[in-house]
Image (cartoon, rainbow, N blue to C red):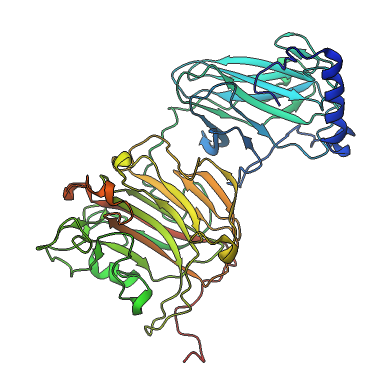
Length: 513
């Protein structure tokens, strides 16, 4: 499909273009798409997404990301556009047979513009290829800042004029795109709805205007029993602070009951990995060397250079957390935090296989896999933490440890740069561990879903303030001993599960030697 509103054959003779279009229609579109399509529900809804964070059915153009946002109590689709050439947009899912909209006059989508500049939004509805160079109807609407407007395609018309005689029984594509972007842009859209009358009164209802524009930063929710925008069963509420009223962990003693402070390997005494310099310690409550410091309403994993230390392997001490509770598919974890910054900083939040039993023994401890909820790499060109990675780690051996592939993703070449400085404001990072289909979320909206079969024991949750990146030694020449950059500040970590999910016991299984 062309990325422009009107396909143009250019210098090709019309007969050549017609033959090519007929060939494509016969050979590349399934016969079911050429037959009458699926009749939508009586409401005319062409896409429903309530109660799910999986937007994988939306086909976004490269660079365009979509998520679900709440707008005055309604769950709507939020679409973010970077500055791109052409006409970036999203295709709404269509049955493989196409839609049969014979009883309808057109399709409309309500669009809200939360930005400060007008946005030209186009809705395009396609038939399968024919000898016509553009077998589609389109309409554009310029949505003013803060306004909500319904973009409506009336079948048989394009841009307010008589257009292609669309075969309503064979609608194979519904696309929404924007034009002439000069800066990153966001729109909020309702469902695409087929309407039976071209009169304005029959158009789909527009969402109410929000009280304020969409904000990427998050707030700390007062209700601890639900994750950001969902309703699951709360398993653990680790809300930190020594003065806040809603805190559940106020001191190091309470922290010790829920977390370990070394990796699970080497009898749970491994305090450093070969990939970075800092090693992990857990000094007692009140010790001035403490690396797990409680503030009024936070817990900070510190990074410090001890006496005799420096910018080299084992020259830095830093804090980490390893959850005692196992983590399995069907569970959900989120953390609201501000990360470290500067060259050499490597804050990370991940899950790793293995259970430490209460008697000090362990389950099997294979590696890989692991699931990285986030990793910020403080390379010389990323000293400010704006870019992060979220992956399934198979140690470059997918043939041995499983082949992950993305269902949908806003990441490009493994990286996501939404633009904000994650060391300046709190943001909520989450993993919805749907079995074989984990979903990553940022500030309550999905940013990636990957297919991956976890063939390993139950996992545990890790939050590590890693400092000094061993495999980037040239970059580390620019690292400075500025401890003020090395605070990994956590508001809360919370864990939920779906009803029916069984969390493995940490009591050693019977019969285990």
